[in-house]
Image (cartoon, rainbow, N blue to C red; front, side, top):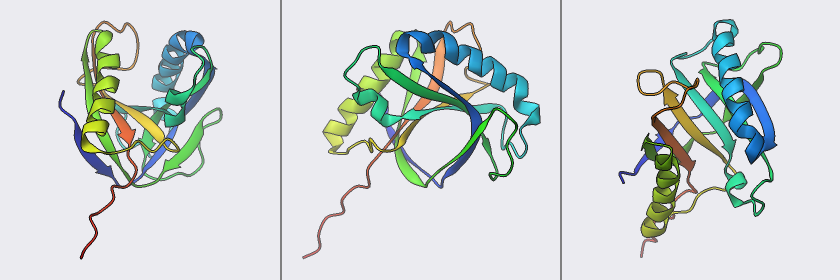
Length: 169
């Protein structure tokens, strides 16, 4: 699996927050994507409405319960946070490095991409920042966010802790 590192200078995002058990999110998140896509024209300062982000706390991966409560936000990047449309949330993610993998193929490719990221982190002696947000980046030309989901082609960006530079001397 091809893993790369990308540095993002920070992101301003506006979107809809979905909260629920994992079993509920499989129904609620697609509905939230449909609503966000319908509302894209009302979100001021959108950078590119053909690129959307799924955002969730990296710490959600650490939950022991199979059916615990999770948070997933469906978002579009904006140039700056100003007033946001009613019913949406704005958030600013700080500059950071991410490990990037692509989920490409059938549904099994999603778990394979996350597993590949974890294996890469171990091999590279890097750590995920569990206090930060993980991103899923969807581009209309590759895979759009609205159902049906027959084939997957999107990027997963896991937040990395700053790497320790070697000591001099």
